[in-house]
Length: 217
Image (cartoon, rainbow, N blue to C red; front, side, top):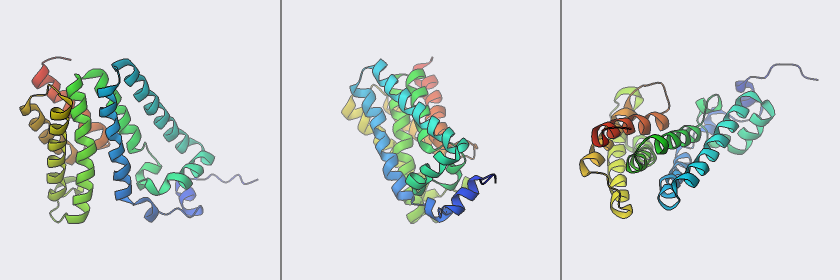
């Protein structure tokens, strides 16, 4: 029986899963876009059932992340199946899915509906566009290893995505809030806060919009 303690790095190395295998950013963002089902779900499903569905997915994602960290057999299975969709740091920490599902759950519980919908839209569309344009066209580095091109893409995608939800879903969000929120989300996404931006962008932007345009929680 092998009593050797296996680390996460050992599992990556011994099972032929390398750091290079964890970098298909475009595939990650295609999956990321699927998260648009979150604001759409909240528009077509009543509040309580929508919250139960969202809470179930958030709990399941967090549970899998914990098992991935603490249970080696589960970790190996997880890495075999979905390792190529992970960033290297996500092998040891919570995945983007857990962060965005948790942020969405908190947002829909704490913020007004239109605030929650647009801040989740900001991070889904903005982050996807920033990754694509930052990798493909990014030449001017800013803070936190971001690029100016990526940040511009984030803002434009977040802004026009929120406009689309406002127009087609009839959100009561003021036009000034849509613009302000997109700008704030872009700034938050670029800051080195030490917490995944899938969590910080919707929550910090939501707090500001709630205070500025609603006045209370």
